[in-house]
Amino acid sequence: MDIALFMDFELNNPLTYLSKFKKLVKDEGWVLDLFWASDYTKKKRPSVDEKISKANFLIIRKPLTFLSSATIRSKLQEIIRTKKKNLLIMYTFTEFESLGVLNQFLEPFKIQLSELQIIDNTTNQNDTRTVVFHKKNKCFNHKFLFNGVQKVTIPHPHHMYLTKPAKILIRGNPSSEIKDSIYMDTSNLKGSDLIVGAYHESNGKILVLDSTLFLDQYFDYNKKFISNVFHYLAEK
Image (tube, rainbow, N blue to C red; front, side, top):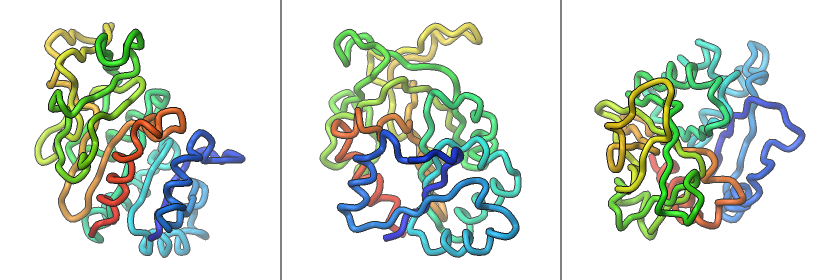
């Protein structure tokens, strides 16, 4: 199985802190192709489009430059709608500068991200910013993706807004709440009203998840869930 992973920053090692993620891909016998925003030029575009067409699913990580192009946003939306290609967006709290372009891309799929950080005083000892979402608290909303999964650990999760047909993937624990915001009154946002993962299924499937749950530091806590994510996206 081929996976196309799009990165924005041309790092010496683009999979820094994702070595366990990379090993899982290898152990499953899959192939990970890396692309940069700079690859999607007029000269290189045909070869990139060919690899996209062959990939079983796509991943976007650190998407600011890549999705800043209206042409690329439109192209990806078209691929998902018409060619039934599946997409994982790995987004993290350190990328607020990309929030606008991400939301422009996600708007047709009725998913919108926010800067509202979720904390929890009860799920992870004294670390209120790393939240453990539990099956027993009815946080999970997808039978296949959470098969064999009892909990998912996410550091610095942030709230998302959805409208139908987008669906909640992970919701807050009863004890979850929004960290004080200077931008708006969030007193009505708490518990199961909070959304930290979302999906949209039509011709193609989109998953939006916090990229930190894939990092080496948290990978072992989330390995079964991550494996389920890959197999879900690989399905046609």
